[in-house]
Length: 156
Image (cartoon, rainbow, N blue to C red; front, side):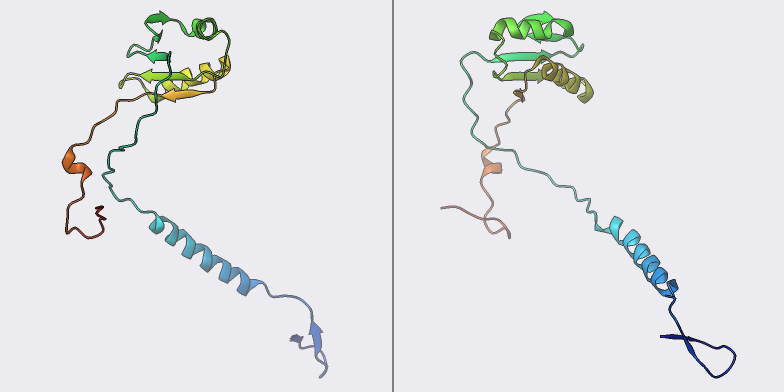
């Protein structure tokens, strides 16, 4: 309880809360978190291994949509414009929008252009889009772990 000196010997109670210590504690905690947050992020260069997952079986008649290096579109072997994309897909699939469309793009195509083509597919109603890439076959040395290295598991 806080007291106030007034005229006379009577001490009356003061019901006001002194918030200055609370503000001081909050500011100290804020500074601690501001200093500690950037230190908690870790930037470690990691050389990730190649995936050796078994490829999924191909459908009988896959629908390949290709974004060429000059940003033109090709459906199968035929070059089409972006406006013809929905009509071409509907004519080949019979307007079956549940079929998967395999999207391929040249390495030099910017990521934003690939997203624009995916948005065109979404606008046409084709939501099942698979991105196509080359499979890299790892060398036999990379697949087998080295013996005697700590932290690696060996299988019989």
